[in-house]
Length: 632
Image 1: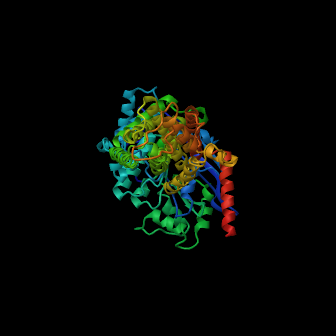
Image 2: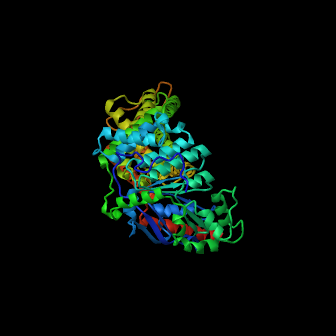
Image 3: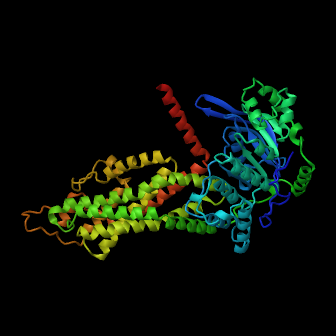
């Protein structure tokens, strides 16, 4: 096989400071994957076999729908349910939990953290992946080596949003190389790149493989030059293995089957076209020729002596099974929490357009509410309107905090999914950092709104009452923000933006249910339903903050002959809140905040790694949905 001139000498790919990992040879036997939708089952992979060795760059090819991405997902452990067969690492049955710790999966879409530069992204990832045992100086050397290896030096101080397609792809690879994973999976790494960027990307992946790593890529249609770079090619056709061997062995393989490839034709394109049936039905012959991946006849065709030496070097490094090595999180939960907080605060500060937009919107909303309820706080003739002011504050705290989360968090979940699957950090440190990093902003924006509306509406300027009012509003805002996380952790942006406001309507209606009926309690069912609305406790808390004893009677204006609600005690009784306790409402709101955050963590965890109980619920849901669709 001809080696590209862009390739460096064999060896460790100049990553001398990375932690050493054992090479991993990945094999699979009789691998089958079936998708079930109701009563309909579809077989995607049909008992295929193969082996991907360390030190080799492997390409998985095939027509669209042949199952190459499915094969990659199963081998990476990204997709488990529905798969059967034996997958081995260094000849031993694969321990999936252990394998996930030492392998990395780079998805087709380059999901990168926004608003941070290449250097910052690499440094933060190094802190997460290498831990405090590695000194800052050594981390800087490791980062510098990888940045230079992947030719990102010129983009070192460029934010991720401004990177080109090739730079984004190389940064995605660079981030996963920091702790030297023995196995790297890439889903169509050249998609969206031009020929030059694709060639650079593949050449660099080959350099990475030469360091003793197993690098496996799924590709759509590589050019002839790119195709020649790959050490190992695995062709999938109709869920079966149609070829396994070197890139140089493709043409002789097809020639032996009386399918000569034209001299001016790209061998990769030709074998994919043959596999898709453009030249007749030859897939069965191809599958039989390689025994559905069992045959290794073409795996050494055209391999030069230097590759044999490289394999011997890799074999010497292979000291045994993967299970002997402990690939745990290198950083502690506290270290992960601190690094994630630093990253989130940095991203928040740099998102100036978003910050100014929220400030302007809170000022605008506060000005509108203040203008509508000006001077009503101490006016006995407008006590009902002042109750409307309290309700408006609750609604403002609901929507101004929930809607931004519904809009942004579904996209954040995709980033979390990639980083969590590749074991950057645990979910508990991430969720704690998420809450801690966004709480100060929520409090800050709430104070902007309250600093406008509270004095202009002539509410009592007594320090305890002011603090009580602010505390309740902030708690309602934090609960609403957490409710947005609960909703958007499991839904897409479109569905979240629909479900969030719809769920809010019954909460608002229940918060005012029974208002005006005095202290007469509503039916038990509605009392129980009302007790589930945190907005009801927020509304009661605001009323207790403003009208709770001791409070003098309200002022009746001179131009008004009679003020029905001049007496604060009578007004509170009519509103059905005479027995309300501020501290009880405060305690319930704090409990609801805790429970909402707990629910958000649980749903996010199930989104990333569902347990059996959660999977059972989803299966039941799909079954009901299928039955309903059949009935219609």
